[in-house]
Length: 306
Image 1: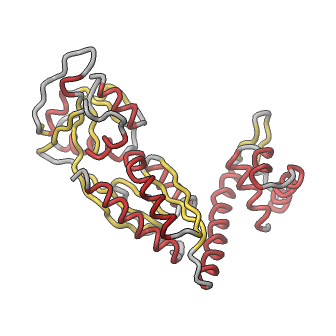
Image 2: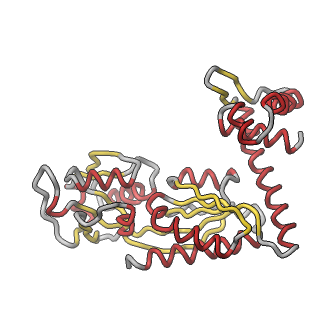
Image 3: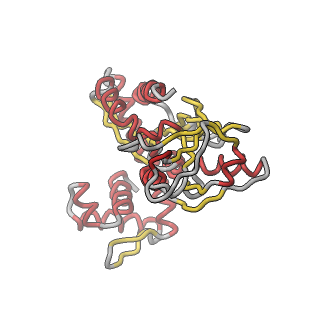
């Protein structure tokens, strides 16, 4: 096994195609196929199944993909640390962001990164907490921002912000139906009488809402499961239901003005926004600068909604 073979296999597996991987790596497809075949012969395993639409991974291929990504990540870290000895903070930094935060901080984070780390490469990935958590453990991400991450000896964490979830309604501008009149604050138990539009499990906001409602002896009335914040807010705007999200998620919405927020009390639904990175992999100087940068950008962006 050598690095060229590993890189070839990982690219084919990720892109699902030998032809696309060959273009991405800038090598001839026959050479790419030979690299993968050499791995399969060496380990007496079939890693990829070829079909008319590309390739799919076997069980052995899934195992090799996870390890292959980790190996390539460690090589990149070694190259970065050797570069830092020369005084250059370089290398690649991959950061995961939740959809509720992505639009709010992507631009300021990119500007800050280019200013502080001009020789480094930034990769931003948007996704829900479960996917971000998996990406971190598999080595595809160096750090990510998560809501209410479970404790793990494999992870280092730092809470960036704690905020109460709010109920979001269409207020008096709901189209097509007369909205229910709601006060500025509601008790959590009152949400059981409202049609809720929330993401599917295991979304962190949904898990928090369901756990707290069950604890006080009521159940949420979920009428729609939608895994997209803009889509949820569009449906709320039309008067088709209510959302339970942090207040700053309205920054993702092009026209937040028709939407109204209501505080939830008895109990308050507190959600922790947490910066997470691996405790098992070395943290380079570039990553340390990036971690501090994410912390500052997130806290500054959210402060305007305080």
